[in-house]
Amino acid sequence: MNSQPPLVLLVDDDRDFLEMTSHVLEAAGYRTACASDPAAALDAMTREKPSLVVSDLMMKALDSGFSLARQIKADPNLRGVPVVLATAIASRLGMDFTPRTREDLAAMHADAFLEKPLRPADLLATVGRLLGRGPGGTTP
Image (tube, rainbow, N blue to C red; front, side, top):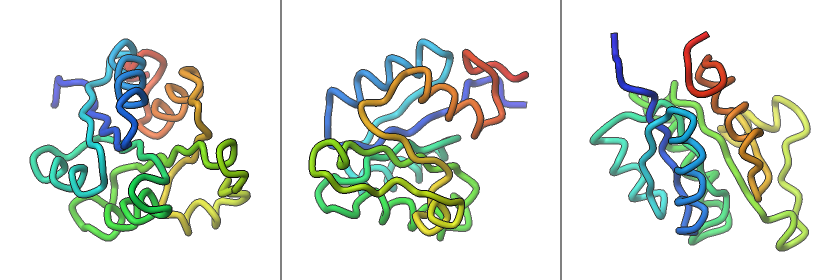
């Protein structure tokens, strides 16, 4: 049995987002690792498989998050890792990528979708639900 808390890999080109989100997750009992782009995230996953990935949708390219999620779900060693896509694109550019159905979410290769700015309670509830854990990162 692994006694270490679950590892959440955060992928975003915004340092402030990485720092603030890491703080929220670590305060709730999770471990975090950060990557500034999909290539760095995939490299990090070769060193330690994360329990869950939270990725920005738009980094160097509009579809960076979609591409990363697709690569994770296509890899036999990673396909079971839940992916949460997070974006501020609706508030910044007026584009709405919010999935309306489970099929929309599946087409994104994601397990959950959150709008930025992330509310800590929403983030923790989503991570806890996807990892089958209760509040504070504890196993129910």
